[in-house]
Image (cartoon, rainbow, N blue to C red; front, side, top):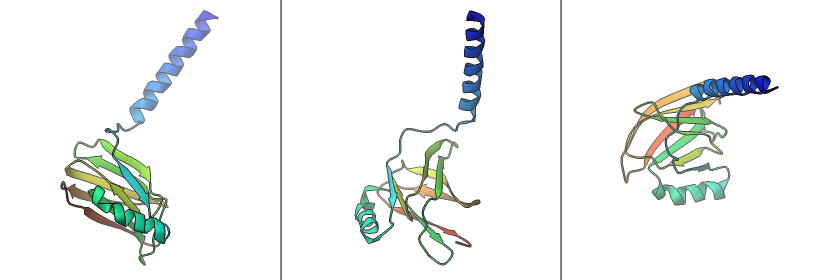
Length: 132
């Protein structure tokens, strides 16, 4: 019985190690909010823009607002700093100064842009999904 428990523990440990190796490392938490579905939500985000230094605006080809966009932001060293799904067409984040790679994914489409964040200045970046 002890032998079976030891083998089970080793197998679980090996599985956990492999799973952890496949998981991107995440930097300390980045403050962010997303939304903008409806006039009140959009007005709330616009009122809070000054608290953040990055604004992502997520729209379709015709300019229609989109939500449920998978957002991945990595720093210059390739470390993940924000992995989330937007709750609306606007995502605001507060990042340290630097250069970042931003990926936005929806329905199998991936759009990618490199951005530069400067302290005290709101960087607005648009992602326009074709066919949406």
